[in-house]
Length: 206
Image 1 (cartoon, rainbow, N blue to C red):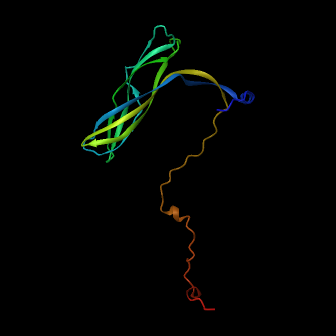
Image 2 (cartoon, rainbow, N blue to C red; image 1 turned 120 degrees about the horizontal axis):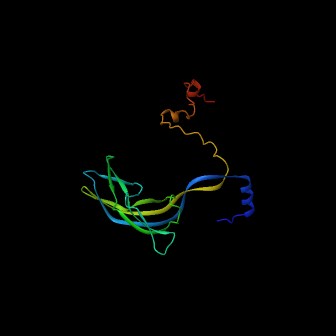
Image 3 (tube, one colour; image 1 turned 120 degrees about the vertical axis):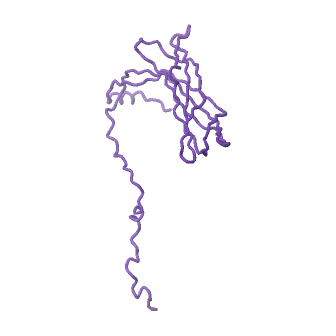
């Protein structure tokens, strides 16, 4: 990373405005990972094609945030994480399921704040199939690795340098279905557009 030139930074800040914006500020975040070596699903007489994972969610009524004795500004955070998935069959049918529930019991930085200020626990997931899924009859067996990012988020007002509004965006690209005439428009004009002349067919022997 290049060093920041203080003089250049000062020049930039002199020519920009400063605006107050309301944003979701990340006060703390941490990462974890889980691995399921054997997840089973019923394909219901279908042939397996692919698996698509959906964002993980905190199961309603499972989130508990409690104080920790002798650790001010840190809290114990407990919740159940659930990750839905969708199996697509060879015929395009979708079979829905969920991975085994993931139970979390962690410590996170959540500073003391006024009663009205609300912190949110936000979870982001990335799930990947590990190895090759195996289908035996109607049963599909597969392994899954899950990357998890847990964040403490609070809505605050920040003063930031701005350069004004963003410029107008580019024009949208209209969808154009393929046409058999597209390539024809770029073909060179044929040399044999007119019928051949006598001299073309029977050149004189000179």
